[in-house]
Image 1 (cartoon, rainbow, N blue to C red):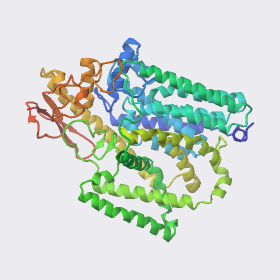
Image 2 (cartoon, helix red, strand yellow; image 1 turned 90 degrees about the horizontal axis):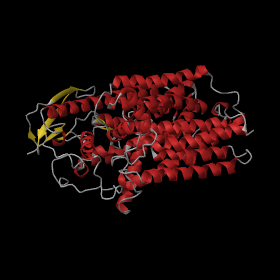
Image 3 (tube, rainbow, N blue to C red; image 1 turned 120 degrees about the horizontal axis):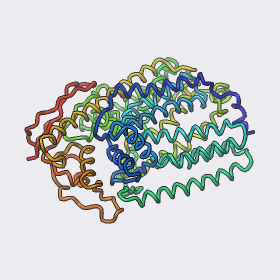
Image 4 (cartoon, rainbow, N blue to C red; image 1 turned 90 degrees about the vertical axis):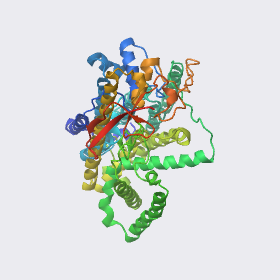
Length: 585
């Protein structure tokens, strides 16, 4: 047998070691209970996907509605199953994602064990991934990101099982399962297919000493490509599916400059999301050479004039965490473009400055320490060989190509469409594995207290911010219901992108997007598209011609209405807030 597989035949994790993984899954469920995600309205983009699941539960057919660029795939019948079991509600459909998040927490724990991490470090890594301020809001939605994470973890687990297989046939079976499952599960979100396209071939390369394995791997890779092409062709021919070109704008100097700016923000946001792990390196400050500490201090000092200049130009927010939008912002979680008005800032400038400097300092200390590590000794250290027999070389082969491929596929969005912070989740998986292995080599079987304190702080913000997201949305829905209960047609009320999107689909069947090509002529320019004093893309929801508009704060271009503001409470300050109902002049 291959040496990689032979070293681990008697070192599989026992059932007692798997029990903490169940604790990781239960921790996800507990945080969801604290969030109280009860809301009969969309969040982010999931209103469109929930509508497709509702239709599938009723008819058994996929029906897109002009919003989804992701294929959605198996997530739709999975959500429809919960509709059939519990009846239709936004809450029931979203609970299908909670189940996948719990399974992902358990699965990532098991994967970390198989990469050689201790029980403590494996639990820590699973919680960093699944309780981050990116993951928990998506866990309580019907977005495709958590199902995508689950699909990647399934593929990675099968690849690791192939490396521990006792014979050639078993190894081949696990790799076929890895490729086949990834082709099927990747239909939820196309970037997941990097498992079959990159991760599985990397595993075949590690097992290349098996006779004919490379030829079989090439054949399986070609079959995967054919299957993916067939899926994309099917998606392209579905009515009201939304095609997405790689680059839609002009490729010029400005676009390239924006690309590098966005990619830098992406990397910084990635570091922010794994900061609980990076915080461990603060315990190594005392062991740094004075020259190293001086260099780190100089680098941090160089940011001061930049921040001062940005403050004078009123662009300081662009230099402070969180650096990418969509889920995380200084106004909380998922509140950037919901409705008109100015939502309150929950992350003060001083706190974001402190966090930014702490993040950069921890990263520089980690780089300096890792740079000075004796890697010849590390390579010989028995503790770095996982139960799969993977040393550092094999670990890098299975994880680095997948990570780089993820970055490559984000290039078109960085050049044109824009990057969202939630795109980081697939990249967090390999980065956490690699970084935790380094940390275990440096700190042993349990990370320093700095890391656990940071994880607790991040989890608290994740729970509180997600709780407030639903509190705000319930207040919006209450205000909207008061308007419609007074006899105002729903189409005469603008309640934000999620509310208006559902109104548009119910009224006309699909979102009016100029990218629609199937059916031909489905897009119709809206006569309301140039109207002022209205939130969102007016052209996409022509059915909504608002007389009343929901706002965070009173907006000057709107008038007071006969409806009183809706009061609600949040966990993050300011705790007492209101949703206003204003009237168009």
